[in-house]
Amino acid sequence: MGQSARFVLFSAILLVATGCTSVGHLGIVTKSSSESTTQLRSGVAFEELGPVEGSACRHFIIAVIPFGNSTFSRAVDDALETRGGDALINVTVSSSLYGFIPIYNVYSFTCTSVQGIAVKFKAL
Image 1: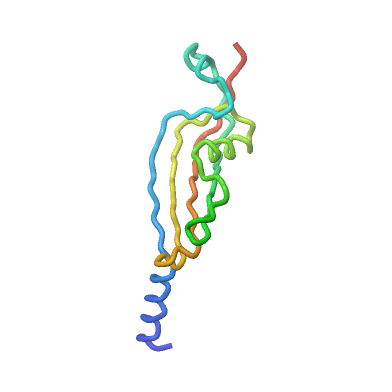
Image 2: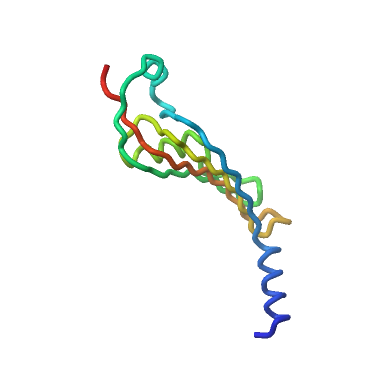
């Protein structure tokens, strides 16, 4: 394959697929369905369960037909389900958006991913 053919192939791939990612950090995040604020205010002890990862994605077809759930709370719940934790500490959050044939928005998806250390609150 010649150098000009490689350039054309690479250019075509760039025109067909695009994406971007943003990253942030948080100290502690609890399950969306729990009443953890009272436990956190009382200084409850916790046990570290280990590192976990979770993600949640939402897909779009022709930019008008969405399906899936890419919320931060869904990604946290997904991560905590693996170890049965109540909260995450030292959390890293990333949000990514990918588009295929972006000019026409034929298909795109966005994903929220979380990484952190799962913890389990001890009984008061």
